[in-house]
Image 1 (cartoon, rainbow, N blue to C red):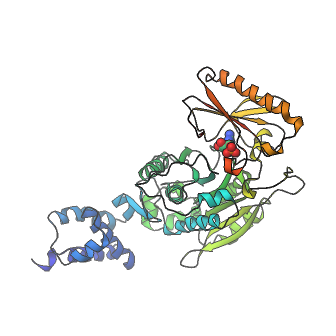
Image 2: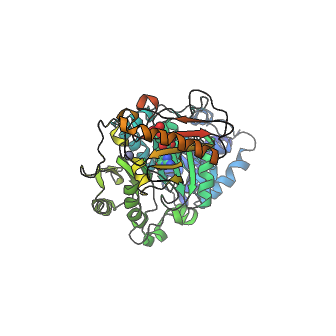
Image 3: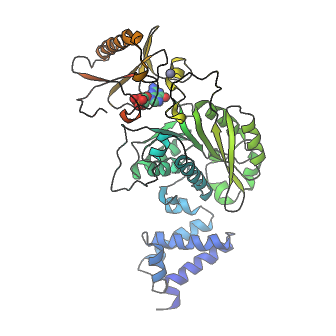
Length: 445
Ligand code: 5GP
Ligand code: ZN
């Protein structure tokens, strides 16, 4: 065996070629390693280290050389291998989809930190900070408080998937405009077994989503248009311009995102997003301009560059707040249902009159799942007075009529009032669930 035939010599050779192609030495070394392990069929780093002085396995050069050539032409390593590590999980990537960056992991870190320190029961329950083990599929927790997260411009789905894996109680809506991104985000959610809690929707910002969120995250396009041409070739020539181009000063998308997120957060809810080098003053100004949000923090990356904005939705003014005897769950006490009734939050309404509104549940627990909601704000069943007896009668009779209209009346359906947290109430405005379209078991759900 000559020295030329060892893995080590081949990898060294690739490394020198990468450096000659203009790749930074540290990156050249890492990439040569990663591509060699890929050519070897997915060897672990330790396995490669142990085998470096051995002769190349048969066929190695034939597999490795084309990969080296692609990298020499400055194709990003992620596209060559088809995946990229993000927050300890393997994210599939490909043409048309931005490759996850280490900076974006700061967003995951920040969401987990804010939620675990939160006073909200829903957030704490969701954030028990147990990674979801792939062998042990965690069923969605219909019975517990549900944390709603939106990931705007999800791309590969890296943020949505990482958050879903770490927050077994969270439901995540991930949006993107690009078909390639939507396909990839769905694949990544399925691959990591969180497809039942990550809903991937096509749309601009939050326009295709509905309801309020506890957390909104985003890694928006933020490169100033004039800088696109001077980006390194890996990005300029290979990555999707739609995921990069942030308009003249790079802040166009952030300018739209901030007010839209303010509109769609529960009081106390979090908006966290990434931005680029030199943009922190601009970002501060945009958030300062939004009266419903407070800038809580700006996080810097490992190089000390400010990168992530952390903003929080203010509580409404005391005068405008709907009175409630005992706020149990401050982060979720926005009275979502009052807002739906007022038409401020969209919902699929199927019936309304002077007393009641009925609409489809956003997270249906059965093929038919309608909520019958009184117009008057009454937080829980415990807050009913004797004057409300007719109201409860009206709600039940309306449920029966709707069940028949929805085609579930004859075969059977269930009506449920949840009262208080331990019974699963997460929206503190009384409502009757009408569930049907399949045989019902106890406990409800
Ligand atoms: P609870 O858990 O309080 O008994 O029921 C509240 C219900 O409201 C849940 O089933 C939940 O899925 C539903 N819900 C939460 N947010 C929204 C929303 O934005 N729109 C609609 N239509 N339903 C929602
Ligand atoms: Zn209400």
